[in-house]
Structures are given as C-alpha cells and as structure tokens.
Image (cartoon, rainbow, N blue to C red; front, top):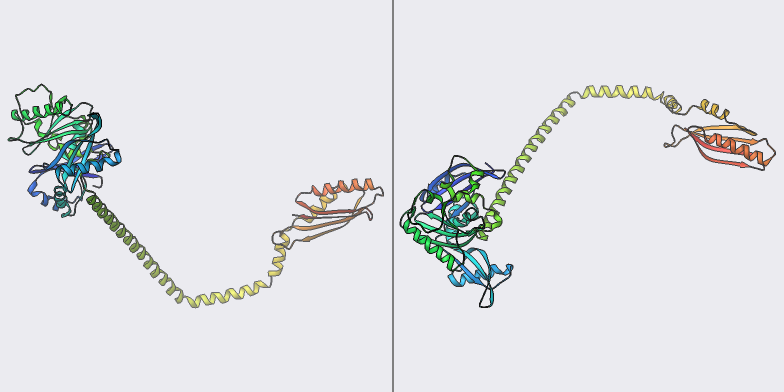
Length: 453
C-alpha cells in the first residue's frame, strides 16, 4: 500500500515490526510480527517494502548533562560537538540534545544541555544492513527518545523504565523531552526488587544533581506484565497507558507488545531526534530521486510507445485511403472533367447573376423618393437627384446620394431659413448619413451629399 508505514524496532535479540496505515490523524495497525535478530537479514531480503522507520536501543552511547557557556542558538550545536569530542575522544559521532535551561554558577550564567551521542560506526553498521538489501531508512530514532513524547508529554516529571533484553533503560522525561538517561544491566527479565534499588538510586540522583523530582515511575512495554516487586519506594508506579492508543490505534494487536514501533509512528520530524547521518540522508534522497526519475522515464517511454502505436496505425489507415483513391482515380478524372464542363457553361450566366446579386443588396430607391417628397421644402426646389452604387467593399450595399437644387426666395433670411429646415428633414431620414452640404447665396444654388443604406 502506498500510504502504509513500516516501523522496525531492534530490541535486544528480537526485532519487532509493525505495519500501519495512516487514516487522517489515526493509525490502523495492519499487521505486526516479531523476528529473531539473527534472521532479520533474511526478512529484509524477502520484504517487498523499501522504506522503513527504524528504532534502536544504542547501549554503546554517551549521555550526560553538560554545563556550557550561554552560546547563541546558531553556535550551540558546534559548541556541544566540540565538548563531546573532548570528553569522549570520539571523532565521528551523531548526537541530539535538549536545552534544560540557564542558571548562575559562581556568578556566571551557564546553559545546561542534555546530550545523547552515538558513534557513527554503530549507526553505519545498522544502516549497512538495510543498504545491502536495497532498502531505505526514512528515520532512525533512539528507543527512549521515541517514547519520550508519550511517556513524558505533560508538565509532570516522570521516570520511564524500559526493558531491552536484560538491560533496563531509565530515562527522565518532561514535556516530551529527555532530561536524563541511564542504562543498567540487570540479571533477570521483568521488574524485580533489585531493580527497584536502581530506581531509588536514579531518583536520588535526579533530586540531588538535576534538581528534578519525578512524580511517578512509568513502566513501559512488557514490564507492565512482568512485575514482581514488593518493595515500596514511596513513588507511584504506573503502567504506560497513554490515551493516544485507545483513541488512535485500532487493530487486533496489543500496543504493549509493540510499544517502541508504535510510538515511533507518532514522532514528528520537527522534534529533531533522527540520528541518521547527513551523508546517509543525502544518499537515500538521491536514491529516491533516481527511482522516481526512472519511474517517470518509464512512464514517458510508455506514453511515447502508445503514441507511436497510434501514429503507425494512422499511417497504415492513411496508406489504405491513398491506395483506394488510386484505384478510383479514373472515376475522379471523369468527375473532374464533368465539373469543369458545367462550370464553363455556368460562367456564361455569371455576370447577370452577379448584377442581380449586387442590385438585390441595394436599398429601396422608391421608398427614398417617398421620404424626400414628404419633407417640407419651402422655397427650396430640387433640380436633380443622383444615386450611385458604392464600389468599396466596406460600403457595399449602400447608395452614394447627391441632391442639387436652388432657392426660389429673393429674401436672404427666408432663403437661409427654408434651406436649413429642408436640410434638417433630409438629415432625419432613416439610414441616411450626411457627408457634405453647401448653399451659394449669390447663385441661390445648394448641394447635399450623403450615403443611404
């Protein structure tokens, strides 16, 4: 499934695998299984999924609370890296850190930072197992950091206890951030009285050194079932029953058996607990880009082949049409000769038909004369009316109209009045456009030029 997430959790001599599908803000556990650590390479070989989220318990690690100068955030990572290299003598390592706060020591302000570092060789040994099988790691989380968002998500300070093999991991968490980590090798599985001594020592250390007082002890995973303790240390001990499981996890599998991989499903990338080295992230990103590019190229090739198939089919169909036309060519020649003969006969009548067509498009001259007769002329006398057909393509279907005449009145005032009265009547004719007009007072002759449609 394209939206399925596969989480692999290395827990001692076994590997827990969870297949989950995200539906909106929920996860549905599709399948879960446990593989022996020695058989995990064979499992990867047979697994079709290529992308994995990995959770691992790094027993060979460095974790401590460092007191550093109050460096700005953009320089803090470099300061921490130099300090860890000085303390551990490791040259190549990957680390994550949590800023615990600032305080004043000997009248100097310092910044307390909890650091968790793992040698790069341990991470590369893990990553290599996936690369050799052609798999991609999307994220690599330390087990306790993956749990911190659930176990210590609130403001209360809690001490989480996680069992991996015979090792007990004690981690102090508050508001989803790790404050302290301690790994203790135990003699038996499950929670027993001698483990409670380590719990008491860890609690005392947190109170005296870190000035943090755990409000409760949280047992994670199968420790909830394997609890054989009679000692009472005065701090509430609870099993991990975060409400997110009852709200967001559906399926037939009990979350307590697959606590680590299920917790990794809810880790947000912005938290910054991914231990995958940058060069490996770049390698996986290039691999993903190349594979997407190969898929795109394969799809493009398929589209081109399909288009080529359609083109070839079109060419064959077109060739068939040409062959058919060639076979019918004598009939085409006969049809062409007949058309040319009839066209020659028709051309004899073309001028007459063209004249009819042009005259049919002209306006009604009789209606024009009626309108001119209805106009009051006064002393204006029309001596000639000339109507000519326009030759321009833009004025086709209109008449070029010229009216000429003279004024019978001797009085210039009456002559001017009668002429303007007649001119206004002519201008009001429907479909008439006045182009030019003139009146000669000496000769009493007038001229009106316009266009009538």
